[in-house]
Length: 306
Image 1 (spheres, one colour):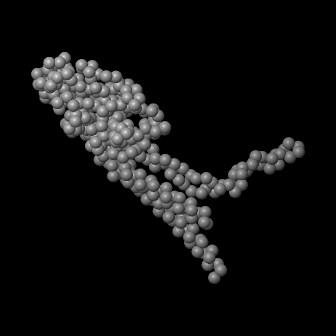
Image 2 (image 1 turned 60 degrees about the vertical axis):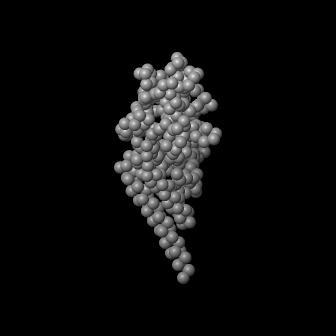
Image 3 (image 1 turned 90 degrees about the vertical axis):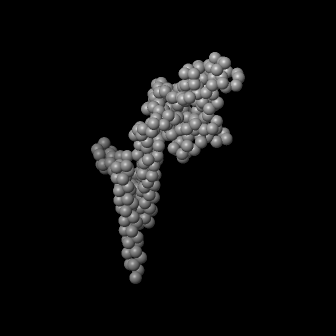
């Protein structure tokens, strides 16, 4: 009976954790780039009362005793893991030039903190800061490669090669006496607008009508994106389960293309989550009934002495 008490408690704990996962999904139903999670259960170790036995033959080779199955009593349930759903979220049109959505499997690569930790996100609500860097709402620097004389640099092959995308010429202007912006000298012209294409390349329009390529975003893919670990702020960090990131430009391979003026919304299926609320609630109620029933039996046992 004590065994059934603890088994029921394990069920209460597991279904509470399922409810926690579901509640987090529902809370983030409108969070840009959010990826829903699913709670997965598995049973715990079972107490073996008797092991399985093979059939036994007599001296004449005839079957004397048939085989028997093991007798085991389960000891409850536990949360085996939380599986990420990396499916594409719905599209929301914003019309903002720095809002970007990845159509494919890639992730924006950002760097945060004094140690420039590399993080990965699908939330493309970006903006230019006062130094000309593309940043996320929490201030993480978006990675990319700079263009020199209009020629884009090579995409990094390792985390150590990452660098913030430098778009400071958009704010500082260009030197018309040089072959392109960034030539030595004091800026003499201004950029009047810029755009980002499907490959993540940033092209600026000068006040004289010319165009300069300033840089290109860096995206990343993973062999097992479900192995990524959430770090908050709709960002992930790479783990041994996800494998090392493979960096590249958008619109190449399986990385996916970039659409500007749009955002990828949460991929939470609200109808499924509300159903999970009912399932976790009923599971919790059933396991609480196990606990109260075991308690009633214990009370009956104690009352035998009276």
